[in-house]
Length: 428
Image 1 (cartoon, rainbow, N blue to C red):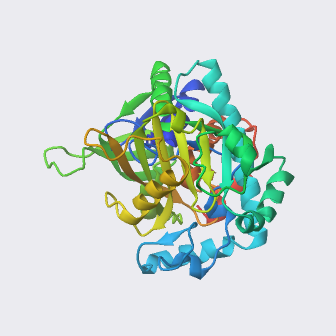
Image 2: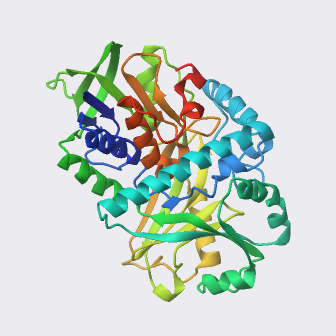
């Protein structure tokens, strides 16, 4: 079939690759000038089938939504919610009740585990060379915080996750560069989790897709989707401000929308109201100053929800989930928190502060649904398929979502049941 994919982050590019692998004629539309330029650019680099993100695992309440409290993790507000954001927040709070939350965690784990298997299969089959390492340590600073997580850890064990509980002393043997002056009560070692460079992988998969005759239309913004049996896309080059560049239209047998936070705007004129909200995360990346002082793989500070990972000769620190941020406007408070957590655990790891030191400070918007799992499958409009709402788990769930969706499009039964991720749960 002649297919279009809208969006060239890791979700869109893996989707395009799997479709091209099945023999379809695929065109990818991307408003940026290359792949992985937005949420996939400098994310936390964690592939976490074992560790459900903090937004799905913590207790939810109105108090945790104010920036003035001492709550360190979870969703934070940059400002008072606007009228259109209140319904989403209400759904998010309801999804945090024990029953729905446990169901969400189970669905996310199932998809993440399948996706990790697909990522490993692709990496091995194509001998992809990108920065990666195995294992994740989740760190707790005191007994009280560790005790509060016992219920969540028990649920994770019930899902069959491979993990090992470690004392603070044993943890320091595994990660000898951990700062001895920072209190460390206990840790969990997650064997299935990994660290990998999302942007590097996306560039490699793009090249593989191109070898299968997949076409990439960069610097091209889709302005309108018309679904009437097939799907017609109207698009412009650049940002559409040049009056000498009239819009172009092209018809496809089907279109797969993977445009992250921009997807809601494209779906609204079609009568499809997807409850997506852009939730902003931050990261800092810097060159390794002294390899002996840097992490061997990845650690996650459970108190702050901040990850510290080793990507080749660089260290990346990432965390935060802020609703109401603005594109291009980084949170100074969030960046200070990242620097502080890095100093707490690996004070000599990165080249920071010198005149010649190059530090990348980044903010990205993750398109998040209120109940956790992404939307995968056919919409109620013929020819329009959705692969949306992965939140901060897009790198974890991209490969499996792409393969399962490609199977569904070709009429095969995916290896994973997609009913829990159906667009129909939001009447899409």
